[in-house]
View: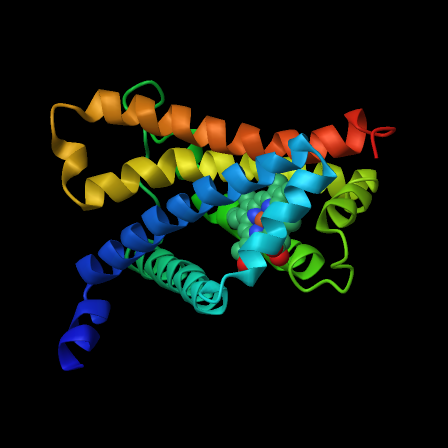
Length: 215
Ligand code: HEM
């Protein structure tokens, strides 16, 4: 127990836990996206998938585990940010075009807070809903509200930015980022982030603007 306390009170221990939780969340996002893309296959297919998922006796344990991973990632990264600010109130001056910080890196706090707001609204709308007879219809109806749809698209832009830096940063924490393969890792991270964000953004755009008469 004391070992765990020492781990979380050290800066490197906190960085490792944020990175490990971030990578686990990426795995969740990929499976969540794969499941959500079944929305494009129609009401029967998606509702069948949702029913199979809910009938799984391991689901409650998986949901609690997921919530704890989200909490760990959010709380520890905010603590690290606060400590960095306290240690260095005036940020370094970085020259443009000379290996300066990327957009993703600069926007980590803002994109993270946007995603937190998104997550609270999203889980309330889709997980804690009473309209469970047809989850497909519930998703369809939610995206008929254009403000809601555009908020989702903005959040997915935030997600792309957050992942583009987070992925590289996590690998660097685990020492992978110092290898010669860094440029290939960077490219893979960027492609993965863009694919995840675009895949998720496709759904509100589809239901909000394209599938109006397809219900
Ligand atoms: C933008 C497209 C998205 C759509 C259409 C969508 C759809 C859904 C739906 C229908 C559910 C309910 C599943 C069920 O109860 O069986 C759900 C749950 C959830 N979603 Fe999403 N989602 C999207 C993006 C995201 C993103 C980007 C995140 C994370 C940043 C996320 C995190 C979650 C979480 C944590 C749950 C609760 C999981 C659980 O407790 O089982 N979703 N989503």
